[in-house]
Image (cartoon, rainbow, N blue to C red):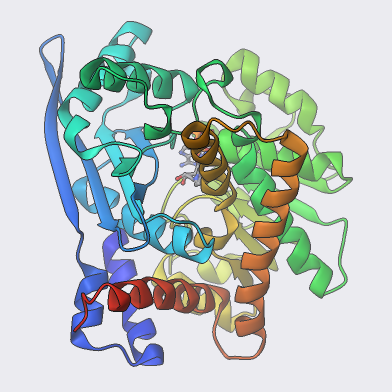
Length: 403
Ligand code: NAD
């Protein structure tokens, strides 16, 4: 279903940019699809590493551990990475990986074995100049560390730039941990600035890496976060939640629903009457079934693909502004790029300098998209896709691949 959404959106872009069949086919197809069956104590897990496009540079994108991972999903996620990296002005193509597994059913040792097996299976198609993974849903810096170690053992040399989102001790950077949220927060504030609004009410779906940090940032600046949720359900407080307390509960009890506040379902959270709805869980959360009930005025997509093609049309008609995933969550890969630069050059850059650079890059990506959005009938996603796709196709043309 996710790739179907992409095809429909690409149809619109093809019309607006008057794309040739060759150009459209290039965008619809993937440059490299690698798959494997991984073995952990006799149990088999399907795994993929896929590069959608590499005209701007090596593949770049996270690895997801989730029971719903499929080849189609990884293809969609790698497509979005191509566009995200292009829009952010990074020297990367788009890649993504995944393992079809419920990591909650594995112990720590099994997760390590699975992560090492992944690198063994794909070591020929990974590398700092080939394709560079990072964390995504249910993967983390420790998993990146196991993967780096396995890769370096296979290759017999150090190559920290083969993976990002690493622990600091293994040449990661501090900025990476909350960079996705920081980037999303920067673009949200830029949008609110254009309409002269500050101090908003917010609901956040998904309280993992992306959702938790953005909720903390919004709370710290005096916004009212009235609801948050995770896979077990949501909590609500009309007067605003104390997000720092919710974080404590999540860390201790592993879910936000153990917090004392009123319980709500994830479906109810999406339909709350708030200024800003932050989507930070998974794909296909707003569909044609619930799009009409959305009351938020702004939607920030920290997750990839949380709004379907049909839902996009409904929200646009209702004048709800969606800050699209390829813009809203590109802070993570931008910080990954800083980490990769440091790993490759050995040059350690000051954290404050990197924070400023992240802010500058997020704002310039936002301004490019907002300018086109503002002077056209496009929704923000169409504007972002047009800018990103033009850069990729220009690179392909210069390489002579579209003659
Ligand atoms: P994570 O594993 O840290 O957190 C995911 C969260 O979503 C968890 O709290 C989980 O309980 C919750 N969740 C799962 N199913 C849910 C449901 N049905 N309803 C509500 N909550 C649900 O993952 P993450 O890194 O925060 O990623 C979240 C999204 O952000 C994904 O779409 C991911 O691709 C995207 N993203 C993350 C990064 C990053 O740097 N972390 C970068 C770009 C995009």
